[in-house]
View 1 (cartoon, one colour):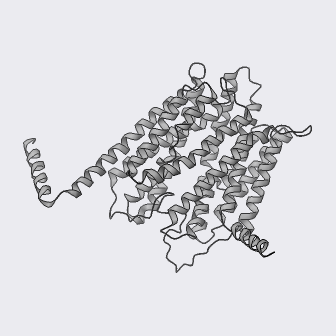
View 2 (tube, rainbow, N blue to C red; view 1 turned 90 degrees about the vertical axis):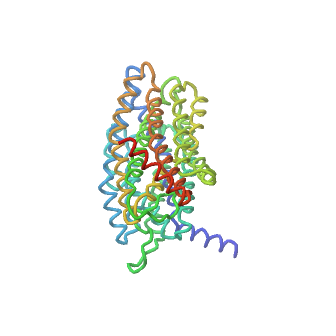
View 3 (spheres, rainbow, N blue to C red; view 1 turned 135 degrees about the horizontal axis):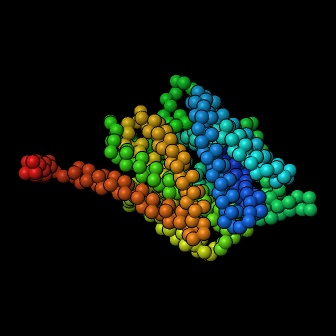
Length: 457
């Protein structure tokens, strides 16, 4: 009896933390993503040819992704403002209500036979409640509030690992749930019912059970604001006295190009695997999504291992090379086994962006870290404005002769993204070498540089 009591108390305490909310949200979300992908394919099946079907699918996702990406900007900023004024639960609860309503609308599309265009309204409703861009920073704020500054980066990495694990499990079962049906319920209905129930439970936990630490105005804020000066995976670092403009500019260029390459390729990968010669079923789509979620684990392990002997710039280059090689092979993928080989090369593809944020926070004063990271996020939004229509147009035009051209283009852009990081790495090495010079060697080097300038006018 005492053991049962202890277990009940432990479960009750665990449910007050944010981790169960993260797990339920990601489980429900992965089920929804598989369902939406298969519903879009089924609704586009009336096209006269496979090329027309692919164009119909990519046209839908073009509009849907643009809505999902840009409608949340204003609401997420408003929710961040509310969070910084003590409403810590708002950036979690409000987006979760949008998650629930958008999943309900897809269920109505499947059960009621409503047109697929209803999902554009669902995307707008999802965005108006803040979406993922409000939910995830809100979650990270709650995590940071309950951890010390020394342990914060480790706690955040564990949360991201948990998020990836939930996505892996959800993806593995989503395809099988989609295929379950009865005489009265068609394909996808049971999957969406489970997704809706998970989101409903998640919303109830966040609204009524989740425990939020309230910070008094007199307490030092440290990193309690929603726009935290440190990145997800970065340790707390004291910023320089002034902005290193060249390094900051190089990091912005690298982040823009890498997000452009990754976002453009991944946005079309779902449509690519549904066409011949792959022609995946719902179960295979789930397995493919699970392979993507597995990159959370390999990237986390990569960061842990590489940081022991490599600089942050080198780690970024390893991650970019990992993505460039995998997505290059994806350009010529014709079998499912080739797809998984290409995906396995993307082992460290999630390393660059968090590490770029970490580097950025080290090149600006602490007082400007929040502004710098917000500007970086807006830069990535700008990349989305461009890459979604550009990659969709290229994919539609190259369907007949090289469907993987978008992946080849993505690989090339990733190589260009490595150039600013390489330059940044070289400049950091020069600075490090200069610091190792003795005063006598520094004077001799400065004298030679002055002589060289005089000789060259």
